[in-house]
Length: 275
Ligand SMILES: C[S@@+](CC[C@H](N)C(=O)[O-])C[C@H]1O[C@@H](n2cnc3c(N)ncnc32)[C@H](O)[C@@H]1O
Image 1 (cartoon, protein in one colour):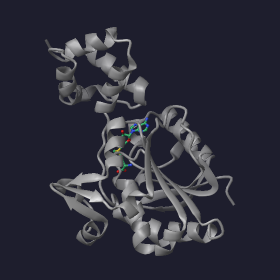
Image 2 (cartoon, protein in one colour):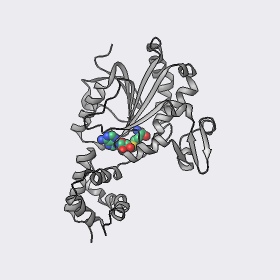
Image 3 (cartoon, protein in one colour):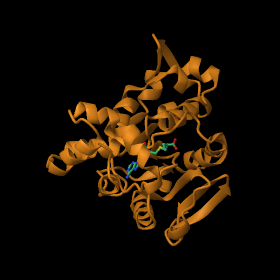
C-alpha cells in the first residue's frame, strides 16, 4: 500500500527532529528510494508499514537510522579545488606563523561525511608543510550519521571514490591498494579522528579550533538552525581562527559573530571579536 501525504509528513518531521534537515514535500520519492533497505530489514512489507512501526517504536535507534538514511553524504577528495588553494596559499601559512610557538593546530571538518575532506586536508599538509610532521596537528571530523563516521574511520575507498578529485600522484603516495579498495596510509590517518556530533544539538566536548571547514551542510537547515550552528561554531573557535564555508555559501544572518576575511569562491570568516 502506498504512503499517504500524512505518512510522508510524519517522516519529514522525524528527519527534522533528528537532524534539523528540511526535506521538501516535492521530494517524497526520496523516502521511497532511501528507506527501501530499511523496510526489508525491519520486516515491514512496505514504507507505510515502516511508518506504523516507527510510530509504535519507542526505541530511538530506528528513528535515528531513518534520519541517517535520508542524509545527503555527497563528498569527494579536494572538493572545490580553489578552496584547497586558499588553504594552502594563505590560511595555513598564516595559522602556522601564529602557532609557531605552540606547534599545535586543531582543525574541524564539521559534517565530514565519509572523511574525504579531512583526509584531503591532511594530505595537503603532508605535501606542502612537511615541517608540521613535528607538530601536534589534529583534524577532527564530525557528522550526524554514524555509518559515514564508521566509513571515515575505516579510511578505505573504492575506485569510484579515489577517481573523484584525487590526483593520481597523491593516490600512489598516500594510499595502499588492498583488493578493490585503497586505504589511506597511517601517516595521514594518524592526523585524523572522527566522531558523531549533531551540529544542531549540544555538541560533544571538542577542543577550540584554529580552522573550521563547514562546507555543504548549511543548505539542509532552516534559517534558525543555521543561526544556531553559527553560534555553536563560533563558540568552538579560537579567537583568531578561520571558518571556511562551501562554495557560494554565506553566513548571511550571523554577521555579528563573524567578519569576512576572503570572499573568492568560498567565503572565509574570522570571529568578529578576533584581532
Ligand atoms: C553533502 S555532505 C558534505 C560533506 C563535506 N563537508 C563536503 O563538503 O564534501 C553533508 C553532510 O552533513 C551531514 N549532516 C547533515 N545534517 C547534520 C547535522 N545536523 N549535524 C551534523 N552533520 C550533519 C550529513 O550526514 C552529510 O554527511
